[in-house]
Image (cartoon, rainbow, N blue to C red; front, side, top):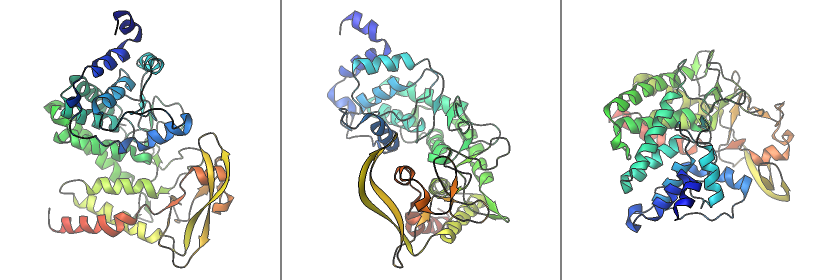
Amino acid sequence: MAAGAVQDLGLAALLFAAASLLPAAAAGPGPIPLDGFADAIHHWQNLHGDDDPRHAPDDVATIADNIVLQQRRDGGWRENRDPARILDDDARRRLDAERDTAGGSFDNRNVYTQVEYLAQAHARTGIARFREASLRGLEFILAQQIEACGGWPHTVPASTSYHALITIADEVTPGVLATLRKAMAGSDGFVFVDDDLRARARAAVARGDACLLRLQVRQDGRATAWAGQYDPRTLAPAQGRSFELPAIVTQESIAVVRYLMSIPAPSPEVVAAVDAAVAWFRDVALHGVRLETSAAEPVRYRYHTATTDRRLVEDADAPPLWARFYDLTDNSVVLATREGERVARYADIPRERRTGYQWYGDWPHALLEREYPRWKRKVAAGD
C-alpha cells in the first residue's frame, strides 16, 4: 500500500494493512465463536441486508482487527455492528472518523462480547493491539458501573429515557459481570490482566452481585425474578422501550439465574435467589396453549420484513409456555402495542409487534429440566 493511501485512510487502513501481512497460521486453530454477536449481526442484516461478503469465522485476526476498527478511543463500541463483515475503504474511513465519538452501548450483548473476543484473539495470535483494545474495553466497562447500585446502563451517553437505567434486558448487567469474572480470574484469554485491574474487577463484581440480589422483585415479601430495567435512584422497575412496560421479564431473568449459578461456592443469599426465581418460573408457566406461526403476505416494516404471522391457540397437549412479561403485582401477562398501550390479548397487538418481538417462548425449559437440577446437586455436594 502506498504511503499516501495509508495517510488518507488513517488508523483503519494501518490495521487492515497490518492484518494482511500476518502469516496464515496467526489466526490459530479454528474459529473463536461469534455466538455473542448474534443479535448485532441480526440487527445489522435487518437494516442493511444480508448480502454483504463476510470473513470466514476462522479468520480470527481479521475479525479481531474489524473489532479494533469499530472501537472508540474511550474504549466503547456502538451496538449492532457485524464484526465479520468485509469492510471496503469507505467503511474504514467512516469507522476512523467515528473513533472520537464518546461512549457506547451495552445493548444486544455489546462491549463485553468484543472485550472477550479480543482477549481470546490475543491468546491465539499474540498480537499486542488485540490485548490493548481488550484492556481499553475493560476500563470502559468499569467506568460505566452505576455507583448507586452496581449495575450497568443500556447506553452512554444516554439519548433516550431508558438508556441511563440499570439494565437487565439483553443480558447487560449479568453479561458484563460474567466477563469481569473471567478478567479477575485471568481465564478465557485474560492472562494479561494485571493485579490492579483484577482487584478493580473483583470489587466491581462484588457490587454488581449485590445489586442483582437487591433488585430481585418481591411480591408480598416473596422473591420472584427480575425486571428489564430499574430506576438508578429509586431502584424501582422502570419502562424500557415504549412497548416494554415495567414488568418481571422471563427471558432476561433466565440470564440472571444462569449467571448466579455460575458463581463458585455461592453464598446462601445467591442460592436462595436462584431457588426463588426457579419456583416463580414454575408458578407462572402457561398450560393448554401454544404459539402458532403461519405464512402470511410479506410486509416490510422499518426494522424487519414479516413473512409470517403468529397467534395463540388452545392445545391441551402443548408443553409449558411462558410470557415474556408478567405484572409486578399479580403475575398476569403484560402485552402492549408499540405505542405503549397495554392490551388484554395477543391478537390485540398489531402484526408488526407480533412478528417483530418475542412475546412468548419456552426460555426456562432447559434451566428447569436440566441446568437447575444439576446445579442443585453440585451445591449440595459442596462443589
